Amino acid sequence: MPTLMRRGTLALAAALVTALAAACAPGSSNDEPEAKAPSAISTDVAKAGNVTLTVWDQEVQGGQKKQIEELNKRFQAKYPNVKINRVSRSFTDLQKTLRLALSGDEPPDVVEANQGYAAMAQFVKAGMLLPLDSYDAAYGWKKRYPKGLIELNSVTKDGKLIGSGSLYGVSLNGEIVGLYYNKEKLSKLGIQPPRTWAEFDQALATAKGKGETPIAFGNVEKLPAMQLYGIVQDGLVPKENVRKLVFGSGGAWTDAPNVQAAQKLADWGRQGYFTKDANAVKWDDTPVNFAKGEGVFMFGGTWWAPDLNDSMKDKVGFMLPPPAQAGAPTATMGGESLPWAITSKSKHPDVAAAYINFITSPEAMDVSVETGNLPVLQAPSKQPSAALMKEVSAAWATLSKDDGTTPYIDYATPTFTDAFGGPLQKLVAGQATAQEVMKAAQDDYAAFQQKK
Image (cartoon, rainbow, N blue to C red; front, side, top):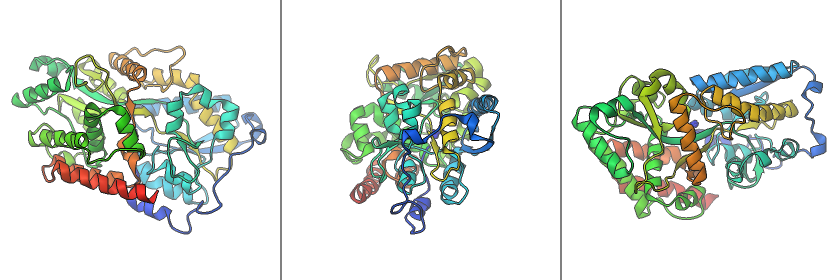
């Protein structure tokens, strides 16, 4: 999420990345934490004595908040000797403050550290997070999770490569960035949920012609435009090419299909398909406005689904982005929520690991369903009851079956949110061309690849 976000989003400010390189930052030479030998760890929380475990999370929205509150309650009931000191912040605020907290003398024990080069890789490079390999040996996370999801939370010790190396976090929820639609508005407009991108373009034109805002869209934070770009890109570019590009193993942002995706966003902006003055609307306000009736469609993550279900009931639907050809497999950004990680200076790493194991256990997947969320692994005994959550669950199953998940594109470099997100703001406002925007993305990408 980014969370993102989630999210979902999903990247840290460039100034904080720069601060990481300062000589006083931990982990710059021999300070990287080492995983304990399996024999040196303890899984017996009851014998840890009285412990206050400080946990920083970004689970502030309705369903996510209910989920973590319930899991914390159950963990403390199971282990009365542990008190959880929960600090919750919005995704954006967490990203702004987390690095400073990790570099201090009294960091939290457990944090949600976003995947990618901008966050987790930088924290690992600085020695701020504890490798979890020894705890995995005790709890079996790599056996529980598919290889692809484990790789999303893995980084090499030097922070130079994501997708391999040691495990640094474990996630609770699954994520899809898909297409929400207002069923009531579609009915009044005589529109069916689109089966192809061509049908979607026709639906946008129809909605605009009848006085509706076709796409609810807020883009103050720049990440929303990056996610929207990524969705369009996934409809034009083979998923393996997108994966290689984001992870730095092939391709260029200036390749013709990538420029074509940017041109589609420019066209939508020029045609007036977005919320008016979208660059002045906050990301988190977008689903609120959509629930109030602004917009026929809205691209967004499944982390919004619980609140939309509460506010819109049967009026809201969810689907994967349409393919180019009806019935063809589709791809879109997603994977898993922000991983729970242990800080290298935690005074209670064994208890922290037990906590992470508990809140990502099969029991936790049931709680995820019960609170209207999308569990990253199949829940053992619970199924969603609300229509929207059934649609989200079915979309996740389809995407998983088709191996259709692509990474969030802000993973590409530590500064991509500004380097690409800023130009995208100009693109949707009609102040930059698709070629100019993609050149800016490629310049930042090439510079990072050269330094890596």
